[in-house]
Image 1 (cartoon, rainbow, N blue to C red):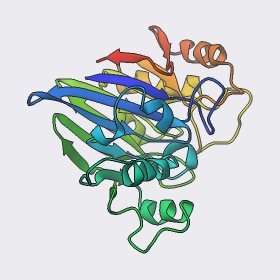
Image 2: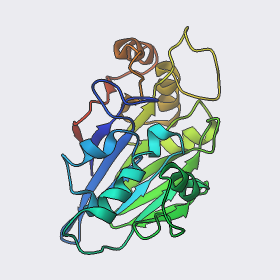
Image 3: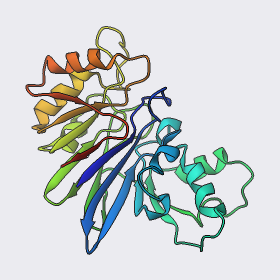
Image 4: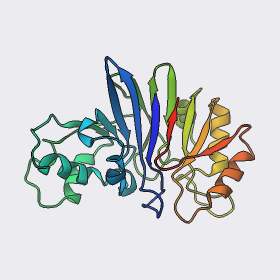
Length: 254
């Protein structure tokens, strides 16, 4: 199983990275299966450096803030209006309730069919499991001001736990239990961001990783105003191994 960081900037696209989007791929039945975790603003452009978006087998959206889903509107345009391409079946999009209506409204002026001919929306619920080729994807409701999910992706005997946006919560530990890699929100900084119930800090992400028995910890979703080394240092106060930082365009093997 391979993880490619399409975009890892938190809350908005930064100068060096689009907003949240993560490509997960694995070989199965003689071909490469590709799923996407989130497609935030700016990510569709970077995605095209790694594969034709028509080759996506499914998309999983953590929540409906623009930095995690807004480029689905661009994907709709890419698939519907690109010249010289035959119609393809819609891409399954697993997302929190209301995603279809929210994105239809964001792309104003469509007919009543909305995006359904290109993107097949399915509502995500806590504990739901979706099989896509070699992948088993399980949704876990996490702690954020809007309905939000983390996703556990399992294939080839490996497990990736992507937290999406969350603060510490019990379901976060279930999501990350014994994961080979915990890809963790680190938008907040200890001593600066006092609000709870929104994001993890590096330290809180590391504590969750330790408590869940994760094997690797990678921090992501840092806004451009964060110093990544501060986030890493705060995580290192708790995490016993190397604290990794998500790098846009990088590919990691699990």
